[in-house]
Image 1 (cartoon, helix red, strand yellow):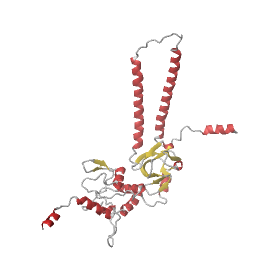
Image 2 (cartoon, rainbow, N blue to C red):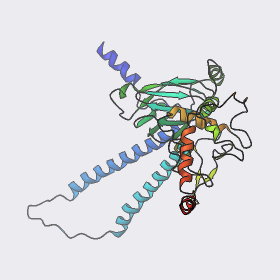
Image 3 (spheres, one colour):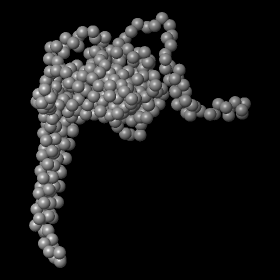
Image 4 (cartoon, helix red, strand yellow):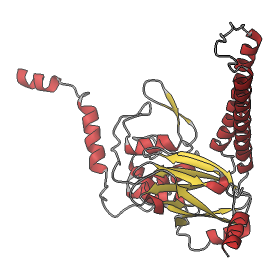
Length: 362
């Protein structure tokens, strides 16, 4: 009975996880090449050691060592050949890395937040998940991942993707599933007492089945949810897009170069927009005053991702907020006092100081 169980275990044994993404086979090729290369070099070293031990052994107790010759050609060979091999490995690995870090233009973008001890997912159509990620078969999927608390590491062995998720910045990686089924995802970075429970599944579905799943129970797209939050935070009081605007126009901003005070330029990507929300005075757009209050501690990473989704959806020439009916009376703004205080502080140094002197003279 024990022998039968052992045979079954051997038959079920897998050296590597299944290959279920378009890049997995390419990464496996590099891995097997490195294993073969290291194995070959190690074998040759052992063979030469044994050969030299026998050939150049001491044959008599009084035998003296002979002076050796210099083999310049051999020395150049064992220096240049490994150097060329290392350069080839570097090129191969760098090419695979940049392919993984550069998603295709038509990739589906899905937001993900890692926190102790779960993975929270939001699809652009509005579907939300915890510790489960549904994706379509044969479509490239770009993951924009952030951490709410500590360093996590997103790992899907079947797809051969592994990404450290660091608090305070966004990381992206992409994959294209080539097999339907359910595949494990893990956090491979120790992140606290319940680290071992921070796991889940990636469910790969046929495109038609995935479309039906997206349309079931959606509460609104990520962009529309971000638009609501944009209003709730009174962002539209400054980002108006007209001549009275006290902040830059956001239509068509995403993916373009932004001119900053001091003459620098910066790409308006996820990390720039996130920093502008939590630390608005870090990089100030040219032509505007530093009057925006910080929202650090008022919005979490999921809400910031919603705001970014909304800003990304805006096109040039389009209003950030569709027109709404005028309120019956003055409405309180959750950040209005902070904005007015910031404006007062920014203008305090520019006020003329002749009034007090003229009053004294009178």
